[in-house]
Length: 345
Ligand code: TRP
Image (tube, rainbow, N blue to C red; front, top):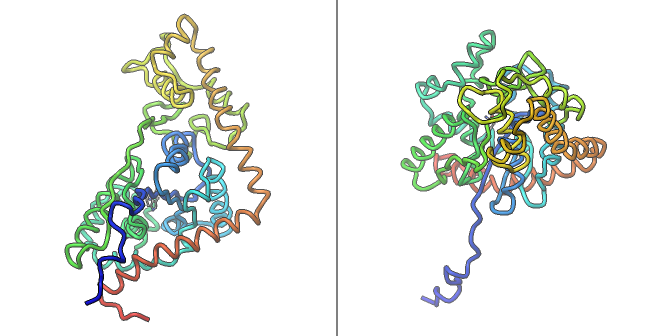
């Protein structure tokens, strides 16, 4: 045998593989301040330390009935919004899920390794099927296998998830482990990524509930594209308490929420905030929070408006993203097809 040892570089000189972070967001309307502080803002900050992949989960949106033109519009807007929030397509992989065929392919294959019973236990399925009782379709049921495919295709190490998606990530880990046990090492087992500043933003009108864009009271939520005046006004109307003391304490849900938001944006600690507003009423505090949020979101809104006027750039960017994502996902899907016994084309 000829020398097989000289050709490979020693392990130590190999550039280290950056850990992969992946997340998806559905194109169902503008992000709220909660999505921004709790997720999307951190995504931008993680680009230096990780290989990041972010995509618009349009296939997942089909599980509830959509108006086609509206879905197309919202998909493009969601993509622009990702970029406007600081995700740099030169550093991160950004794409639209339906542009990369391997997602649907792996989703189907994983469906065949998923038990009816496991999917029946998913709390999101139970909630959504109760809310859309007239359209409990098979996609709504198998949604977690499609999501597992999204994650496993890219061999993600970490998935930043909120509480509502934790069970789906647990399921992904179980499914990947099961597949690996059957066919040998195929998928990396992903872990949840818990951001350091994990402020959970609550409704401004009912601070015991998570801020949500489906809130019937528009004063309860802020979207990242709200006009600065609207933002300040919504904060002025935020529900607080009658104590007139800015401090973080159990039972002061409204003030706690405003303090968390202010802290997330200014980087100040609760103690510093208490000192800053000592002896002042809530009026001054609410105004300060509103103005800080409006200032933070100003560049997002301006960049979004600029991008939406440059459709050519957006199209070129999502096409380039799809091309890269297709190349990466091909490695996994090809392996999977071979392992399960599909004849190579
Ligand atoms: N299910 C997620 C949501 O509704 C979106 C999503 C789809 C996702 N695929 C993903 C999130 C993969 C993380 C990883 O919020």
